Amino acid sequence: MKRFTMRRLLPILAMTGILASASAQDTKELSLKEALDHALQNKAAAKKARLDEQNSTYKIDEVKARALPNISGSGSLTYNPLLQLSALPGEILGRPGETVLVAFGQKWNSGAAVTLTQNIFDQSVFTGLKAAKTTREYYLILGQLTDEQVIEQVANSYYQVLVQRQKLVVIDSTIATTNRVKEVIEGQYNNGLAKKIDLDRTKVNISNLQAQRQQLLNAVQLQENALKFYMGMDIAMPINIPQDQLEKIQPQIALAETSADVKNLTDYKLLKKQEQLLLFQKEAVKAEYYPTLSLNGNYGYQGLGNKFPIGKGSAQGVNWFDYASVGLNLKIPIFNGFATRSRVRQADIDVQKLRADIKDTELSLDLNFQNAKTQLTNSIITLNNQKENVALAEEVYQNTRNNYNQGLAPLTDLLDAENSLTTAQNNYSTALLDYRLAEIQLIKAQGNLKTLLN
View 1: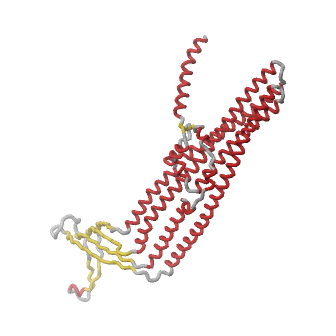
View 2 (view 1 turned 120 degrees about the horizontal axis):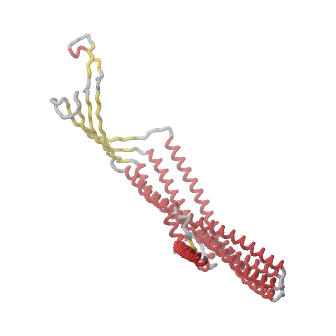
View 3 (view 1 turned 60 degrees about the vertical axis):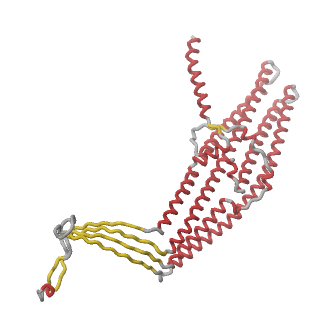
């Protein structure tokens, strides 16, 4: 019976191994650079920024079209079942004193025409052409800003996942160590060398640690889902962040000694480019004060007759003829109730408001840079302190464990030392995350976020 059961289990176990292997192969290894590259290619915000850049070209073409000829064609076919009568004095027809009703026109009237219009002088068109290049530059800078925002979100989330996983490693190590202590105490208890309360305390501690581990597992899953969302990745795709990414975090105090020119930052450049566009908008409104001159011409072909207009000549009952005209249209604005003046003043207010925003943004960016430097310095100090604290907690734990094994320390001291070591290790991981986030903020304040792609 046992042999039969094992024979049936072997294929199942083999299949389980194959599925586990396939699942492991499908797991995507992610370095920070790979995560950032994936986000810039797949995140909706990054894609929309590329589309906005592409769309800016079409907007420029739309403006340029106003300087090119506008050609249109038209056609018509009209049937008049009842021609309108007109009253004529009878003297014209040799019937003095009478009013004669005469029908003018033909039953069928058809025609086709081509019309051309060309702007010769229109100040708003010239202003629009000048603004076209600035519009494209604006969308390019906006795309750069979007990329930087995506990089910041992904980098922050990436390291949050990495640190949460490190905390999970710490708690797993602590559980394994505590289980070994429990086994020792259990053996001592079975031999009458330990108290039951000591064994129960150890079990309670393990239970608490497992509850913490479950909370960390949940936190890791949530953080991974957030990271995949920021990357534009399928949420169901399993990912793995190599542990050596944590070792690559090396505190650099030299970063806190750098300087930055806020006028080179993307946020500032975007506002300055927006200022140029508003100034062009103001110029476009002022263009309403200028006269406009345009050339127009049309050519048409018309057929009239009492029959359906097919064929030509009196024999067919249809007469065809063509016509053409060429002219200049000059429009000189004289007075429109000060509407243009009001629009110019509104545009000027928009410019002044944006300049106030630029000044405020300049101060804000400078503040962010100074705060980032301070935060980085403080995080390095905290990180170094926590690193020393971990070494000290580990030393205390080892000494307490040796004393406990020799009967020189109670179990309470051992459990306290173990908890202190776990807390110190988690605090170090948190300090490492705080440092990395502060470093990212300083790199952002310097306008160098794209160096994370290297």
